[in-house]
Length: 627
Image (cartoon, rainbow, N blue to C red; front, side):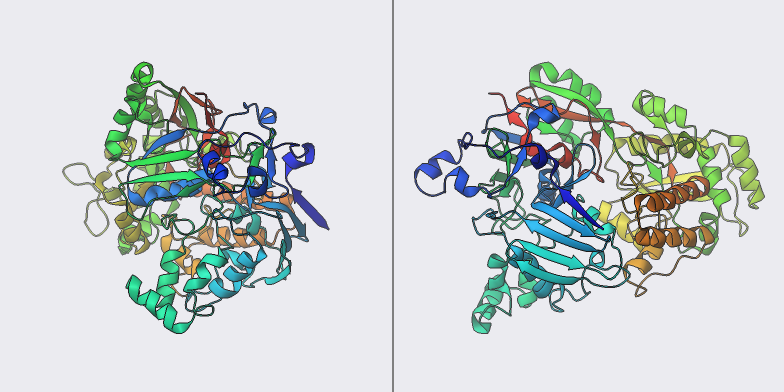
């Protein structure tokens, strides 16, 4: 059976009969002959967006959008927000072709991609199947450039695809078994870029460049070898090489590690509105680096036109006070994570006594029911969040109040009973329970310290746990240090958001629920084992974790959404019962600030990493300035 994934908008719209308004930034270049006319820059079949169908206004091109970031590497968020993907989620969180014109799926294992004829990279060079072939043959399967082999997402049951270039705009990927993760992966906030600008990167590749010339380039760049040079210039997600052509709506024009970044519209972007005007509407984006703690104040002074990152609910009073003078509006979106704040008992923590506790569901349940989520919700979110464990939020087909409430009630007497049952009944003079070896039951909770709500919540949790004889020790760390400690089994109980995907659908891979990724702080070493195919870490050591892995594999082989949904439901039930992560609240309000001049910014929305790439699913390229 063949399923055609075609662009919904193209199905109901004819292509514009005439070209739309040219950008003020590009018009002089066109007049001087430095750029082709708009009609010549667009693909023969651009992605036509009917803004009226989305309840949005048709805009006018021009203007500069100002935003803040906290460090140079955050330039990568423009790839997230720009959200140009081979296939991407629409406003209903359904997959649609984007960069691709269409996708044909046969038997869930054969994927035929149809490119847009005449599509070009940001430097004007044709974007064709040669860019896909180059990545597959010359990057992913080159041992110098990819010593770890092809990316895991390109394997189905360990099998790589058979890749067939049919013509300049058609390419096919065929696996011997179904590969349901493939299209979803391409729509992620950080997707696997399975194509590269071959015309640019070939000059740094040993297969295509004279050895002496390439050696000169390596020496000039002070690189270790040609592969190191190639890889340093080839990072489409990092977005830090201004010479690397892109398909995103804006192009980075600043060097690496700059103290601010200037981006310009991509003259060859593939989307247009129904009047024929090329998107994005906004000509320039300015990213200014500022300390995270100062961003709310700077926004309140009117120094940003759009800001959501680095703003938290605790900033809301300052933001509301600055609206009149700052010329902006503060909208309250909803955070789309499975939990706004979650504690992760690390089942791979190296201390044997504590590891045994972390792996016992009674201990995790006791810590969870000792928490009064109502107090946390009222103190930190004015009661606007949902008091819940880590669970799907409203809007997901798997939302279930029973899942949200499981082991999330405030029951200190039950917590005491569970801890006594674990043999932790003895206490010291301070009332802190003692381990069988005489040590105090002190839980070291480590956080990246990037959100004031985390510290405030942990202070409240510390008081609640103290009531049942558990001592909480709070320790802020740098984000990367925290992650590395967790991966090595040296972090006892990290704090982070809940699942990235709080809006799961049957066709979304249940990566957050199974031990398949080291970034899950519940079991980083079990995740390493899956990711490295046994080369690192260790296999799951408990029956519930092994069952989750079995269900994950079953999901991978499921023939339809009904079978995949059944896997999701059992996995969610296991998580609700086992409390692998202790969530405090979810669906918390997330402030977003937008200039009063900026149009098409949704007054309400879900701010989620997956699915949707934060601002990506809300299509920043459709925002425009009214004057």
